[in-house]
Image (tube, rainbow, N blue to C red; front, side):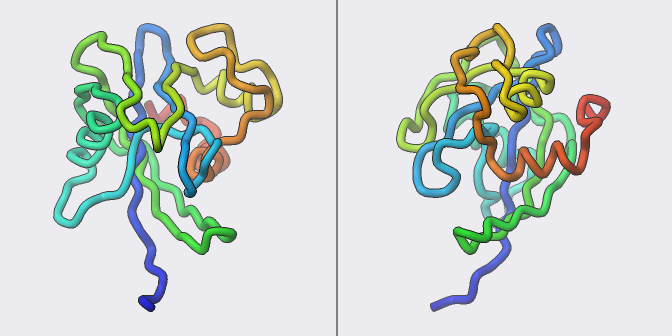
Length: 160
C-alpha cells in the first residue's frame, strides 16, 4: 500500500460583482458529504491552477468561467479521513449570465448563491440571507477548506 500523499485541491470562487455573491454547492459522496463547498477538484499532473478551476467548474456546473487570480491557499488536514490537501482558492468570473447546473449529481446536491456575510451567518447558526438557496439549514456545515479560509483570512472580501 502506498503511503498517503498531500494532494492539491482547487476551489473556484465564482463571484458575481453585481450581487457580491458566489456559487456554492452541497457535497455528496464520501469526502465531505453534506458540507458546503465551491466548485472544484483535484489538480491534474501538468495542469495550471487556472486551467483546473475553469475545467472543474465546467465539468460540475456547465458554466464557462475565466480564472482571474489566486485568492488564498489553505492547509487542510482531514484527520478522520486520513487525507491532507493544500487547497488553492481561484477567483473566477462567468463569461455570461448562465446559471449553474448539477452535472455531477453523485458529487453535488445543488448550487446556490451566497455572499461572505451569508456564509458567516450560516456558520454561526443564522438563516444565511434571503437570496437564491436561502433554504439551507441553520448551522450548515462547511467543507474544511472554507472554514480554514475564513479562519486564516477573516478579511476575505478585501482579497477579491
